[in-house]
Image (tube, rainbow, N blue to C red):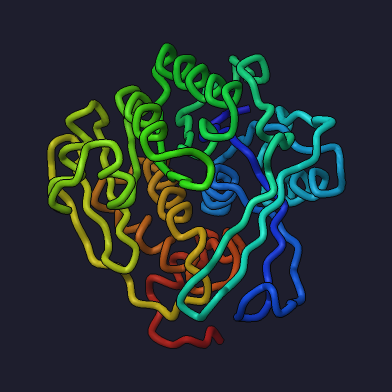
Length: 315
């Protein structure tokens, strides 16, 4: 089997309110799954590349749902481990039409028990891309060690290492996150960050300089995801930038993961940096136009049709 993209982390069950408003007034909830790394794996898989997800899931029905959904999306979960602990759970509430609130129930979850011994060395060492995020190192010391071990294996075998800073302030304090993520950035080839996340690592700088400052730490590809303000990048010392694509926003959660999936799938396709960034931007726009963290991610055919759209109705 050809392992193109390999990623590791925690995938949680998601209970999402199907109405806008505060949770305390009572809402019907829809059950699904989500995780920064598995969102990327699904996105890459839908774009026609092979993706493998590594992690621990609960032996409960939420854990079973995680594995079933990932398999259904063509993601290889043959190296996932079923743990006796409960699977993590997330509540997602659209507080207003413009804001989303996320709450976690993931302390001591199955996913947080990931450890270095769980890693299939042969899979990581034979991959084309290893993708990690700043979420997993925040879950536990063993999960943090697993991320650094995975990066070590990948680097020793010439595997491209990708990192999305993905800072979760509810999981760890900024100073701890800055120290750990700063060390990871130095060991990665591709780094994605928001403006705030970049500032966490390199200090507050002008937006135009953030990518350059990240690249100075070691990555060849430093990309700033700016949401509705587009993107900035420094790739092999060359600056790139572009505006966002205007679409009606149904759900902003998962847009960053979609952007990453589009970029990495394009890299696997052999695309130029400019083309990869354009595709990433398009995948991100496609994703926010539908509800859910990953449900709206496009297939290759849908992406092509979306890029050429002139009529909102396909006949």
